[in-house]
Amino acid sequence: MSVPNSLDELIAALRCLPGVGPKSAQRMAYHLLQHERDGAQRLSRALLAALQNLRHCTRCNAFAESEICARCAAPRRDASLLCVVETPADLNMMEQSQLYNGLYYCLMGRIEPLGGVGPRELQIERLIVRASGGEVQEVILATNFTNEGEATAHYLAEVLRARGLKVSRIARGLPVGAELEYTDAGTIGQALVERRPL
Amino acid sequence: MTQKQRVANAAAYVLHALPYRETSLIVELFTRSHGRIGAVAKGAKRPRSALRGVLMEFQPLAASWSGGGELKTLTHAEWKGGQPMLAGRALLLGYYLNELLLNLLPREDAHVELFDAYARSIAELGAGGAAAPGLRRFERILLAELGYLPLLTETAEGGVALDPAGEYVFVPDRGALPAAGQSAHLVRYRGAVLNAIAADDYSDPAVLQQGRQLMRTLIDQVLDGRMLNSRRIFFEMQEP
Image (cartoon, rainbow over all chains, first blue to last red; front, side, top):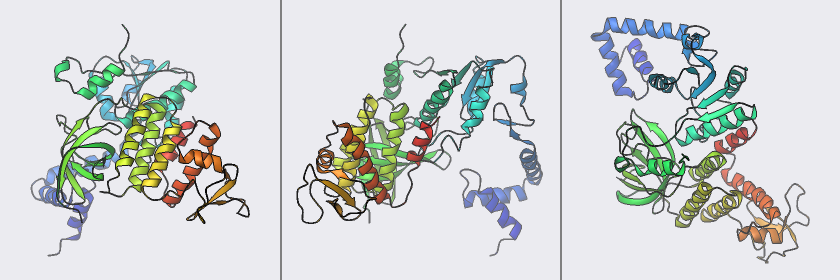
C-alpha cells in the first residue's frame, strides 16, 4: 500500500516532536486529518505565527514578541538583581514563588561537558555583556542542582566574579515542609555538607 | 552474545545519562562486576520516580538490572552514600574520567581494578586537594587494564631495565627506546622519571609534569583522532 505524498510528509514532520515515533506520528496525522481539521488549521497557523514572531528578548534571552519582553520592560522590577536560569520553564517556577522582583537571564540550556556544549555554544558572552552593563549589582545563579547545572554555575561564578560582580547561588537543602525521616539520604547528606552557621 | 542477566545490588557509577522517550533515561553505568553496561531507566524522569535524583554521575550506587540484549532494564538503584557532589574544577575533571571510560571501555567487560581506581579517584576529587596525581594514576591503570600501556620500566626491544640517568623516547606501537638517534620531535624522558610514573610516585613536580605529557600522548594514541568534549570544554572554561 502506498501512502499519499502529503500524508507521508506530515507523518515524517510530526516525528520531530520529542517522544514521537513512527506509530504515534501516524496516529496524530490521521487524527488531525479525519477528526480535527479545524484544530489542524489552527495548529498550522499558530506554528507559523510563532516561528515568524518569536525571537529572543535582547535582555533576558527568553522568547519574546518584541525586542525587549514585557517582563524586562516592566518599570517596577529591580534591575540591580539578575537571576540566571537554564530554561523558560525554570523562569516560570521562579516567578511562581512571588518572592523575586528582579530580572532574569535565560541560558536556554546548560554546560554539558560530555554533550559538547560549552561556554561558546551557550553564548555566555551575551550574559556577560548583559550583566556588566552597570545596572546589575548581584547575579543570582539558579541553574539546576544536577552535575551539569553545577558545572554551569561554577563557570558563571568565575567569569562574573572576575568582572567585579557579586555572585550568589540559590540554596540547596531539604524541601520546605520536609521531615528528615521521609527525605532521601542524598539530599540529607548534601544538606549536611553545605550546612550554614547560625 | 550477551546472556540474559538478573543482577542485584551491583556497585556502580553513572557515567552518562541521556533522555529517552518522554520520561525515561538511557544510562551508561560503570559496574564493578560487569564493567560498562547500558540500561534503560524507565520512568526515571517522572516527578515521583524512585530513581529521580539517584541516577547522578559521580555517586556510588547499588544498581540492579535485568535483560539479555545490548540495553538492559534498570530495575532499581540506590544511593550508597559517603560521597559529596563534585564541585568546581573537580567536577570538570570527573567528566573527563567518565568520557575516557565511555570512549575506551567496551561494554560488558569487567575490570575490577579499574573500577576500584575510578572509585578512589572520585572519592579523592570529592575530598578536594591536589587532583593531578590521582588523575595520572587513573590514566595509567586505565591504559594498563585495557592493554594499551607500554612497559614503563624496561626498553621495548631487548627488555633492558631503564637506566635512571638515561634518556628515552616513546615510539608509537613500540614503546620505550633509548633516545639516541631517535627523531627530535619525540619527547625525552629520563629513566628515573619513567620509573616514578610506573610506581605512581608523583612527589617530584617534574614527574608530574612529564607524567601528564606521557599519559596525554598515550591516551591520544588510543583515542585515534577522537576528540574529548570534556577536555575541550575544560580548557574553554579556564579562559574567562
